[in-house]
Image (cartoon, rainbow, N blue to C red; front, side, top):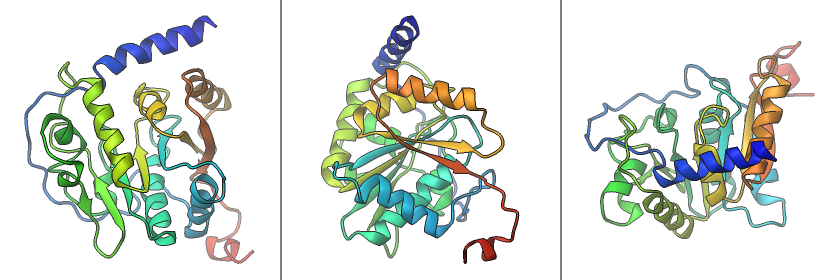
Amino acid sequence: MSRNFELLERASRDFESFSSFKVAEKRIPRAERVSPPPDASTLSREELIKLVQRIFLLDHDARKMVVFTAVEEGTGCTSICAGAAESIAAQVDAPVCVVDANLRRPALHLCFGAESLRGLTDSVFKPGPIRQFVQKLPGRNLWLLPCGSMASQLSAVMKAEHLQARINELRQEFAYVLIDTPPVSEHTDAILLGRLADGAVLVLESNTTRREVARIAKEDLEAAHVRVLGAVLNKRTFPIPQFLYDRL
């Protein structure tokens, strides 16, 4: 009970100045597409289709906004979030937006070869509709809201109500929103955003993530009233070649 109280107190304090930044714009050069990012392995196309269907499309609950968070660093959460966004955009006609809220290590734009000159952090500090800060990805009904140019260092500038207003705007503008966040075991960002979303997906690394760490991460989310929709076991190794495994 005391652990739950301490966790909620910590999240409440963070919510007052959630992921705040120094207002100092910095140009970020356009990057080549990295799929997956250098530190990650991702699921197969078939596995991503199944994941999206189970989380968004097959359940009777109307899940429109979902947070993707790793149990710990290096599990490949960003590439899975990007892959899931592409997968759901291919299965529906409605607009889909993928958001980079990993403000300490933004990398989602690298998955799409996009820029991060304007994005989530800029939308919090600057006026204008959220559509001014998202990027339409070519050939898809998919939009990207990158981290933006103001994610340099944490300070006490950005207020939680400004962020919450933008999250609500995303919910109104897009049929589906997928949000990439930092590891839940290291920061409370996933908890704060998970409380604004319809739930969270946990990403674990095969043969690396310890059971106890995963259990604590799940309990922390649930203690903060964040619905855990499922878990993804990433970077699995196969005893037979992948092309043969796919045929089984």
